[in-house]
Image 1: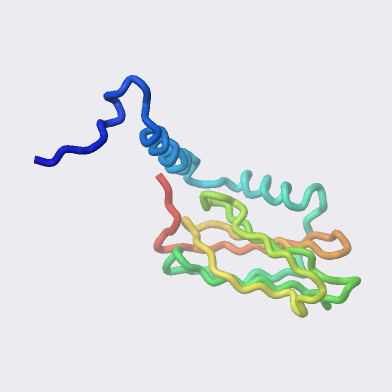
Image 2 (image 1 turned 45 degrees about the horizontal axis):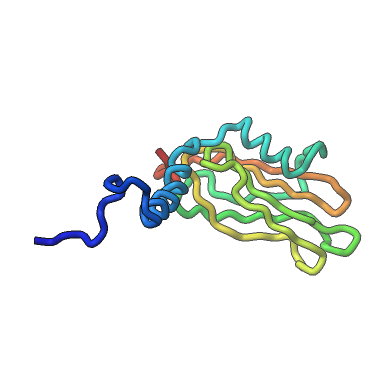
Length: 161
């Protein structure tokens, strides 16, 4: 008959270090499960404002290339292109991706400079469900530009809860 070498956590008057360590290791797991499953369009707008401050958003100078119909939300190809000569006086400082229905509205922020050569980023992202995706470009002169696209997802990804 097998017998454990240490008593279970509840049998001692003082919790053992092993019990406390086990509880501490499980705490992050429970905090991940407890967070909300989806952002909202308002949360996306708040995340954009956190990034750009009070700068006015304008249409143009950035192009978001993403398929309008995605079969699998686990890996969605995305390309961001900004209209910029990428010189020391006129370049893209950063480009960012936001979603309105993923667990976190801010997907990624890419920092660029004149040495980047081209203002283009190719990446992949996960989409929880059909939703709007927004791309933001902040230029060296402080102007902020946006482009958005509606994406229909047939097989959802990053679903929590």
